[in-house]
Length: 130
Image (tube, rainbow, N blue to C red):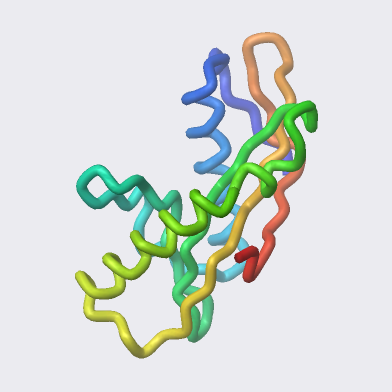
């Protein structure tokens, strides 16, 4: 998947591009997007909450332009996983969801900077990442 977005050269913008690419990727793979950037007080954020068949999926998106700091999935450490699980429980309770299986996925977005543009080169989905 290649897409270009102009004049986006800071880390936050790259993260937003990665999340937008992940949402599009999930939609193309028959996921229903329920919510993006779910926050509860100061506990943190879940990037994407989606549904695939009888699963509710809590998705963490990690974008990288190089593997200098490791694979994107490696950035979802134990502390981050625990935080996502805690937020997922809150989301399920607030929305009274108890009839779906729960899954935690990671979407890796590989990007390349070309001048002032950032190009999405590859996206991979890791189901049941943790």
